[in-house]
Length: 164
Image (cartoon, rainbow, N blue to C red):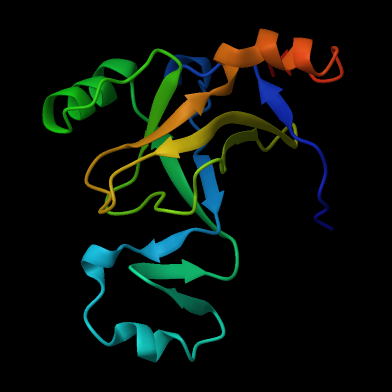
C-alpha cells in the first residue's frame, strides 16, 4: 500500500552519482498544455472534462501528473540555455530532458526525485525552477544538494541531506 511520508534529501546530484540510471521522476499539478498550443475554443471543450479545468492561456490539471526523465550533464544544459535561450544558468541549477514533455506553468517548486527500487528509498534531488513554455529547452531545477547546509541550519538539524 502506498503511503505519504517524508522524503530524504539527496546530498548529491551529478549524473555520475546515479550509476544505476534509474529514471528520475518529475511531478506536478501545473498546465498540461501552454497557451501556444491551444486553439481558439478548445477551452470550452475541456472545461466540461472532470480531469482538466480551463485556465486563461492554458490547461491546468486537477490531478497530479508524473513523468520519467533523465538528467542533463551540466555542460549540455548550460550550453543549450545560454546559447539558444540567452539565459545564464547559476551553479545551483540542474536540468532534465524529455522530448516534447516536461514542466509548465504551475509546476514551479515541484519535486525532481530519484529512487533505487531495491532499497525502496526515494531522494529529493531538485525543485522545479523554470523552463520554456513549449518544452523546447531542458527544464531547470534548483539543486537541493547545494542548499544542504542551509536546510540543516534552518531546521536545527531536524532535516539533513544524505547519500544512498
